[in-house]
Amino acid sequence: METQLYQLRAELIRFMMAYKFALEEVNTKINILQQEFQYMHDYNPIEHVKSRVKSPESILKKIRKKEIPLSMPEIQDNIRDIAGIRINCSFTKDIYRISQMLEDQKDITVIQKKDYIVNPKPNGYRSLHLIIQIPIFMSDRVKNVFVEIQIRTIAMDFWASLEHKIYYKYNKDIPERLKAELADAASSATELDREMESIHQEINEIKQQTGPLSDQDEEMIFPIDLLREIVDNK
Image 1 (tube, rainbow, N blue to C red):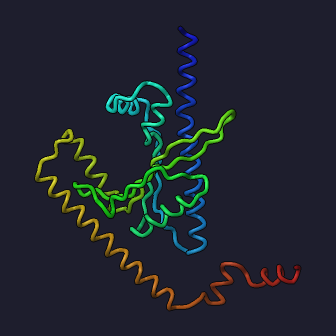
Image 2 (cartoon, rainbow, N blue to C red; image 1 turned 90 degrees about the horizontal axis):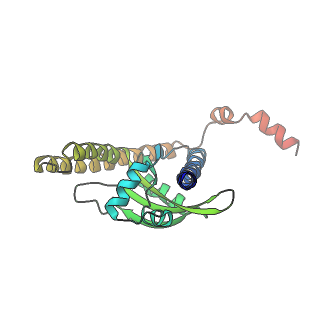
């Protein structure tokens, strides 16, 4: 009996580790995209990234709710948000940029895509959800692991956080008055996103009109004398 318990415990730990490794893989990809985008466009579309692996208690609660058999393959196939990443962007267009860059990764398979920005939930919730699958190379196997990615603006995230707190404060039975106020707040957040994106676009147009960097600015990035030395030594 003790041996079986230890074997089960080891199997569970390894099961959870696969999701931890999957998050590390995806976070590394996001970090690379951030840095490259900053270098190429002098702009970082990602404001904040948060990741988590569901606790065993949360997984068990979902197993019971969805009436999933207690087996590792069944759990893996039917609960696809055990590993989750939330990406906060400055502007709505950045959401689709980041999504596309992730979808273009050769080792990422998009299993499901839900656009709650084009089609918001009835309560006003807006976000882009991806369920992806990524291979994790372990010591004796390659394991394909599901990861849920939510991409939203800061305004969308603030609204979702507030709605979540109210949802649990009222034990899922939110008064109609608050539902209406939340819907109004969602509309205001959407309008704020539009206004901020319009301002950002106007600033970009002004920057483009100012032309290329001056010689002094160029030298601050990479000294001209050093560039000449590199060319001369070729």
